[in-house]
Structure formats: C-alpha cells, structure tokens
Image (tube, rainbow, N blue to C red):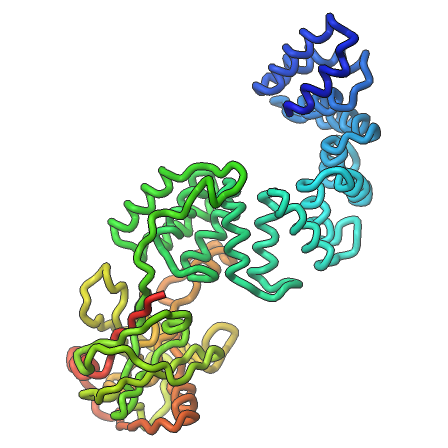
Length: 484
C-alpha cells in the first residue's frame, strides 16, 4: 500500500491542510482501526475525486467489526469505474459472492477481466475459478489452467494450489505428481493451509517426492495450527506410523518453520537432509534365485540390496517390472536356501485366516522379520478390482512385497499396501482401520510365467501353527533396500 500512499499524497500536494488528516487516517487504516480511518478519510474522499482513496474507504467498510458491504460495494464501484485495478478485483469478488450487491457472475467476470488487463496475480486467479466452475462463463479447463498458471507465476498462493490440483488429478494436463508437489510447496511455504495439507498428503503417500512421515507430520501440524480440522485428523493418521523420536523431530521442524516472503526456496530451505533410503519386502520364488516384490519398492532406486536369513546379502539385478500390477522380478547371483510354494488347490474364501511376513519400519523397529495375522475380508479391491484381496493383517511401510500365506504356509498373495487413510478421511470424514490389500496369486503366477519362471505348488490340507509358518518363511522372505 506504500505506492497508494505516495500516489494520494502527490494528488493532495495542492491541499496542504488535508495531508495531515490523510496521514492520520491512513495510519489508522494500516493498523486495523477502520472506524478511525473512515472518520478521518471520508471528508477527504467526498471532496477529492481520487480512486485510490476511494479504494481505501471501500476496504475499511468491508473490514469493520460488522462489515458494511453495501457501502463497500459503492466505493469499490466508484474506484473501479475510474480504472483502479484493485477496486476492480474487489468489486468482482462482491458481485461473485453477492455481498452488498445482487449476485451476478457476469458482472464479476467483467470486472475481473478489467483488472487482469492491468494486474498479474489475483485477477487471473478469480477468473480461473470462474472458468473451472462455469459461473458466468462456459467451463473451460484450458483457459482456467492458463489463467491460474499466470497467477501462480505471479506468486498468488491460491493459484499455486489450484495448479497443483491440476497436475495431481491429471485434469486437462498430464498427471504429474512431481509438478503437483512443486506447486503445492510454493503455496504451502506462503502459509496456505490447504496447500500445507496437500503437501503433507504427498509426503505421507510418497507422491512426487520420497515418502517422509516426518515432513508429512510437520506440514499437517502447521496447517492444524491455523485451525484446519482436516489437518489435525491427518496428523493423527501419520503419528500412528511414527516413533516418538520422529514426532519430536517433526514438531521441532514445525516450530522452526518461517513464513516465506518471495521465493520459498530461499526463505525456507529444506530441512536437514536425512537418509534417503527406503525398504520393502520380497520373497524367493525359485531355486534359480528369483525374488518377487512390488514395483514401487524398486522404482527410481539408484542402488538395491537384498538380504535375509536364507540368502547372501547382495545387489540384485532387476529382471522385469509391471507397473500396472505393481510387480517387480529381481535376480540374485547366488542360490537361496529355500523357496516359497503357491497354494495348489481350493479357492480362497472371505474369513480364511492368513499370515503375513515382512520387514516393516526398518530403522525404527527391530530388524528381524515381523509376523502378523489376520483374515481375508473381501475377494476384491477398490472399485471391485478382482486382481486384489482385501486383508485385515496390519500393513506398515516396509511390508510391501511380502507374502500373504495361508494356514499351511503357502502363498495366496503379495502385500501391495494399505488403503490411503488420508484420501478416505477426506471423502468420508472417518479414518479407516485395518483395510489393506494384496495382489492375488493368480496375478503373480501370470507375471512369473510370462518370464518363464517355474514355481512350486503345495497342498493346503495340513494346517500349521503361526509360529511354524513364520519359521518356514524365515528362509525365503527377504529385505529389499533402496538407495535413491
């Protein structure tokens, strides 16, 4: 507003007595004392025809303890008709929302376009939202994206968040989680709560950025501190996956964070670099040293290491991947001590007991294999996808790629992940519990057969104790470590 102050003072140079009144009124306006601002400035604005002064009066009426939008609209319109771009933007907002004037999207569009011809930033953002929603104009994603991109590049944090949404959803533009993350980060660094929630979600899920629960918690914490109830719920979801030390680190980072002014990359450098290693689980499927795991476990890795009680620690070769079914086939150079067997007969049924074996939360929990139990709850995944089983056995980061075993210790699936608790909470307002998924053995067999891998089958008639199943799996389940 300093430019406005200079402009008005120059216009008032010929009216010496009035300048002191303006400084008093303008000082009150800047400090949020809008009643004093109006008392001091109204006599001046009624005498001198100055658009910038009319804009200040309009803002003051809109920000009173009990806003007077009728008066605000009157003064914004007067200034807008004189060509004042900020007033043109604000009268557009009032027309769009029906504040002080009758709601009229076409008039809102008209004034936003007038302002956009002079300013870069806010007017383009408001135009963008009209084209997205089709209010006052036909829906047009191409125009909406162009306008929001112009606004985002000018630094408008709301537009940056919308651009992130375009890339994250694949709406109009090709889906690109990395670009979605980059634009959400710009908005989040400027303190926009919904962008901070988005950034936390992407860190939590590893979309466009390596999965990082500490930074996910930090961003949820920052948004929650601004009163965002959704962020508070998501912070709870992340906390369940973290150690006390991780939570303390995230809380410290949130305390040290500072609002960005200008270039977010300079104002808030990334927190101190932490280990970029991730891990998952796999299992040996043949005596030739082939290991099956998830594609997302090995994707983007600069180097891999496989280790376990039944194999030598070594760097495997990635033989094949299937991104559609999230499968990857690795090859060891040495022979394993044991291999898994597929269930040979009878279909899996809802309610069947299962055992999962894997290496969850390596670096936080004990380094040995974790054995968990549960049941098959459904014979399909999200949207009735028949490639998957829904299971109740707990799944944690690092469990991906591990085997799902029946009560005879035979493989009936491969753990692929847990339901995105954050996305479900957004949709339903509730946090899901024990909703996890595995890829069915039929999909695994097809993938392996397509690469000429011959696997063993075994009967599931003889039942085993959970401890016995875990002891048998100990030799063919492996830890897969990825350095990015």
